Length: 271
Ligand SMILES: Nc1ncnc2c1ncn2[C@@H]1O[C@H](COP(=O)(O)OP(=O)(O)OP(=O)(O)O)[C@@H](O)[C@H]1O
Ligand SMILES: [Mg+2]
Image 1 (cartoon, rainbow, N blue to C red):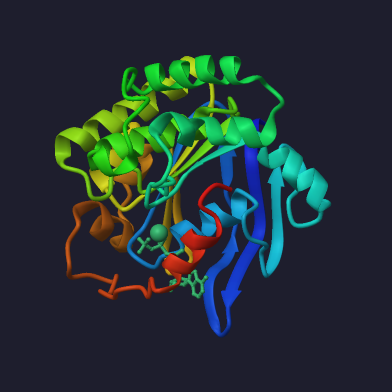
Image 2 (image 1 turned 60 degrees about the horizontal axis):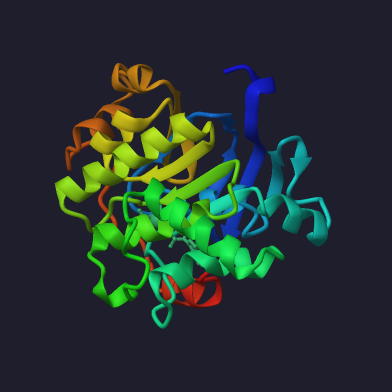
C-alpha cells in the first residue's frame, strides 16, 4: 500500500504490561476509506493494538501516526480533538443500562456539541435508520437482543460522523444471521459514507469477507498484511493454520487472561 494514503501508520510500536510484551515492534499502515480487519488468535494483541491506534492507551515505545500526527507525542488537547474523529464499538457493547436507546446515542452529541435537543433527536433518528433500528428509540438496553445492542453501539459510534470507526469483535456472541447483518452493515456503511473502518476479529470467515486490507497478528507481531487473497494464498504455516482453524500446528493453544476487561470497561464506557 502507498504509505501516503495511510490514515493510520505505526512505527516500531511496542506495548508491555509488566514483563509481558503484548505488541512487539509492530509496523502497520491502515488505508483510508476502506475496511481493515485485524485478525489473530486469543491474546495475540488485537485489542491492545486497537486501543493504541485509537489513542486510548499510550505505547511503551514507538510511534502511531494518525493523519500524520504522532498520538504519543501530541498534547492531551490535540489528542482529544483527534479522538472526535474516531468512533468506537467495544468488544462488549458497553451501552449505558439506565438510558434508553435514544439517550445512549444522544450521549456523545450532548457531551461534545452545543446542538439543541430537537436537532440531536433528529440526528439520533438518522443514525438509527442507518443501522436499521428506526422505531426502537425508547427501548432499554436490557430489552435488546445481542445483535440489536451491537447495532445501537454502532449507531452511537456514528453519532459524531467520525472519519474512522473502530470495532472490537463486532460479531462475537452473535448467531450467524445476526453476525451477517452486522458485517453487511459495516461493509455497506463504509462504502456509503466513505469512512474508514478498523475491525478486530478472530472470526476468519467474516474477517476475510469484509476486509479490503488484512493484518494478521501472532504473539504480538504482524505475520501477514495485505489483501484477503494474499493472506488466503500464503504458505506460511502459521497463517495457514489460522485460516484453516486447525488446533495442531505452530500456534499453541492458550487462553489469555481477560480479568482486566471489567476494569477497563468500567472506566471507559463511552470514550
Ligand atoms: N491492561 C492489561 N493488563 C495486563 N495485561 C494485558 C492488558 N491488556 C492486555 N494484556 C495482555 O496482553 C496480551 C494481548 O491481549 P489482547 O487483549 O490485546 O489480546 P486479543 O488478541 O484482543 O485477545 P482476545 O481475542 O482474547 O480478545 C494478553 O496476554 C493479555 O493478557
Ligand atoms: Mg480482544
